[in-house]
Length: 220
Image 1 (cartoon, rainbow, N blue to C red):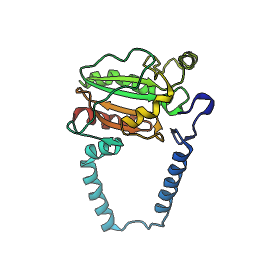
Image 2: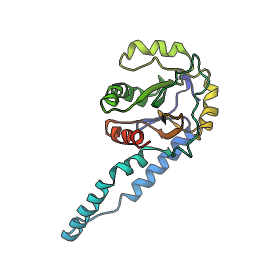
Image 3: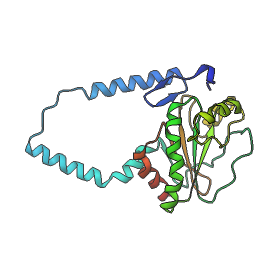
Image 4: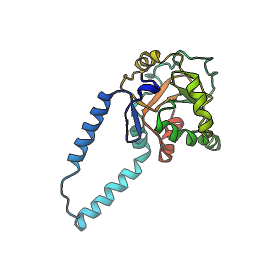
């Protein structure tokens, strides 16, 4: 785990926890560019009609596909593992009756900072949609002092959540929930009312992801 003095590389909206992961990501992006770089001619009338039909079918299947694409890992209640927080600097969050959305963040993670005010606003939106969801922000900063320096400069970012007790415990905790040391920040964990880890997402969320998140929770 990197401290503020050794911050990880930041690439297109995600913070990598290792240079190896960054290289793998860039290789994958290059491969995608090669696959999409071929010359394409405009579709004829028949092709255009077929494309509209394909798009209509895709639109009808969008909720399930959006959910599958949103979660890096997803499990049904029978297969999902029991969730537990890593050792924390203070008391663990109290139990909740509904779902818990755990956002793993750090003050040095720009994508984290960008999305957190929106996530805080979604707490009210969840209530309006009759969804019982507790949004918990788990900091992996190496000290409370780092958060105390950060908070006054970012008043719209919720910083009152739990903090990991020791950054050395991050990698073992990630491994315990099936993630590697190369995982990206932010990390989003969706835990159902039975305290089962049902969905794991690495990387940021945007306003367009609300529907997928709602589907994960409503289908649980």
